Image 1 (cartoon, helix red, strand yellow):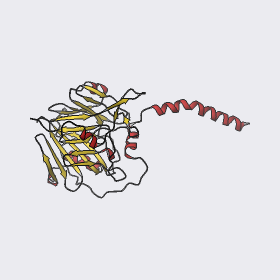
Image 2 (image 1 turned 30 degrees about the horizontal axis):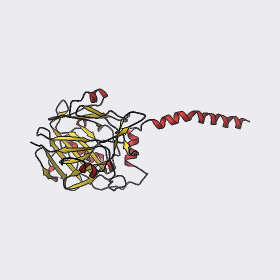
Image 3 (image 1 turned 90 degrees about the horizontal axis):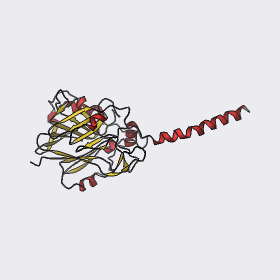
Image 4 (image 1 turned 90 degrees about the vertical axis):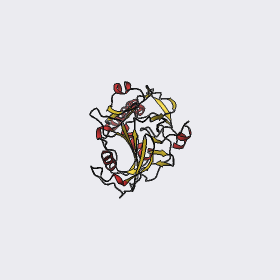
Length: 304
C-alpha cells in the first residue's frame, strides 16, 4: 500500500511540474548556453596547438607583424607566424562603418527582432559599395535560422535590438562617433542615450571563455585610451585559431587596455573579409566553418 501511495505522490509532483518546465523552455538562453551551442555542437576532443605568440609588455618586437594594406584611414597587418590580423583605424580621417542586420521577424515571446542569417559571400554581394573589410558581429542563437542577437545594437540613433541575455556576464558598450570611440559600462540607459552613429553591447575581458583552446576570436578595442576611456584610434583583432591569453596579451601590446576592450563572437563565427581573401575562424573541431551569421560589420575607408 505504501508503495502505491509513494508512486501516486511522484506522479502528481511530475504533472504539477510540467507548466514550470514548459515555462523554462520559453526563457531565452543565457549567453553561456548560446556560446556553448555556438562553439560546440557536440562533445569533441580538442586538438592542442603548439603555436603561440611571444608575450611581452613592450612594442620592441612589433616588426614581427607585416603591413598588408594601408589606406587613408585604415591599416591592416598580419602576424608573420600565425593567422592573426590587426586593423588599426584612424577615426579622424573620414572613415565610416556599417552594421549589417536584415530583419526577419519578431520573437513571439520577447518581442525582440529576429535577424536573418547570411553567409559572408552573401553579405559582400549585397553591399552597394566595396568596404575595406568585413568582420563578424555579436553572439546569437545558432539553433534558429532567424535569430535574436545576444546584445543590444543602436545604429544612426535607432535601437535595432535591446536584447541582453547574458545575465551572468560582464558587458560594456562600444560607442562609435565620427571622430572618437569610447567604451562605457553596460546599462539600458547608456545604450538608449548613446550618441548618433553606432553603439554595440559586447562582452568585457572580465571573464574567460575557453581560455586555453586555440579557436577563432574577434576583439575590438581602443588604442591608448584617455582617462575617459575614449580614443580616436580603434583596433580590431581577428584570429583564426588562438588562445584567449595570447590574443589578449597582443591587445595590451598594441596599446589597448582591459577596460577599453570588447569581445565579439568567436570560434566558427569568426569572420574577416579583405579584398584579396575570405578568412574563417576555426572551431573546436579545428576546421573553418562557412555557415551563415546574422550580424556583420563593414569598415569603409575615407571617401575624402
